[in-house]
Image 1 (cartoon, rainbow, N blue to C red):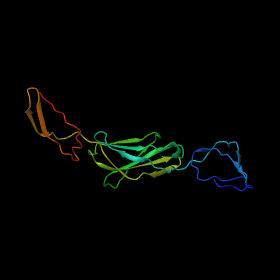
Image 2: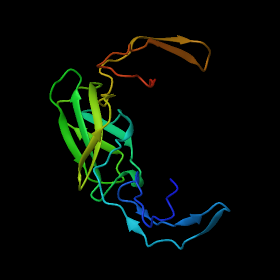
Image 3: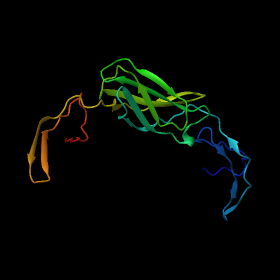
Length: 194
């Protein structure tokens, strides 16, 4: 802080964070040096304000069929700026002009799941997450692309064949299912024999 003239007995402290408790001390100085600090003032809480920091690391994906799972990194308490803190989630299918808005009232939340039977598997959505408190709505994050949940594969592998390699082993081969928007990512195969 700036050094204040010796004849001045009050000062305005600026650039403090909203809705945070502070205490203050005063130190006298002269050409010889700096004296002992005063006893701390009583705790004083600054007034609340609209949150100014949006959540970060907006992502998601996964989930079940007909679900859009959206995740974010929660905003720390010192940046919530007031009581009644929560999150605002807005999303729309990529290419759409209409946003859907949801309110998540829990301070600790870091996830929102939207369920709707009309969501097709692996559909891209534009997603933004913002914040609010009793003072009003804060800023929204930048847009992130999140994909809806996958469905189970809708086609079987083709070209299954078996080759006897010994008295106790058979080698089974097949053509892999190609990735596309409707099959999703194939994480593995199950081989059954009888």
